[in-house]
Length: 240
Image (cartoon, rainbow, N blue to C red; front, side, top):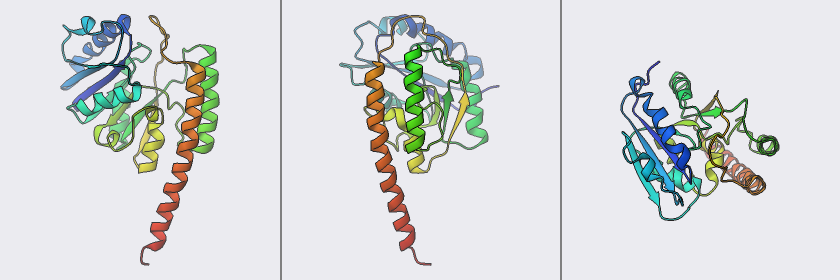
C-alpha cells in the first residue's frame, strides 16, 4: 500500500533524546511508500540536546520552544507550521508504530473521515496507568458519548483544516475527538500496535493526569449541553 497524499508528521518531544533519532529513521524507512512528506519535531523546552540527534536527518523541520509549554501547545505549533494538508501526530517515545499509518490513512480515505484515531487495544503501559485510563474512559463515555475507545492515543491521521478549527492548547488535545464531534467532523478509529517504552521515562504524573482529565470531561460535558441546546433553538427558529 502506498500513500499518495503529502503528509506532515508532527511529533512533540520533551527529553526524548534516546528515542527521537530511532523514530525519525523509522519514518524515513517508509519513504518508498510515501509521497512528499516532512517530519516536524517540536522540542518543548527539553533539557537535553534533541537537535544534535536529528540535525543531519533528511526531511526534518526542527522547532524549539524556549520553555516547556505542554504537549497541546507543542502540537499546535507543529500543526500551524505544517505545509501539507494531512497531519500525522504521534509521540516521540517509540511506543507508536509508524507503519500503522497506512491502514489509518486508507480508512480515512475510504470513509471520507476528518480524523482516524489509533486504538491501543493491547496496551503496554504500567498497571496503574491502564487502570486510570479505564476509569477515565468510563466517565468520558458516560458524559461525552464520543464513542472513542482510546482518546489518549497520540497516533492520529487528521485533516489540517479540521484540527485548526478546534482548541488544542493546554490539555484540550486529549479531547480532540470530542471537540471534533461538537463541530460535526467525522472521526473513525483503528486498532494499532502499542510498544513498551524502552528508553526514558513518562513525562506525566498518573494522578495529576487523572484529575486533570476529569476536570476537562466535566467542562466539555457542559459545553456540549450548551451547544446542543443552541442548535435546537436555531432549528426551532427556522421557518417551516
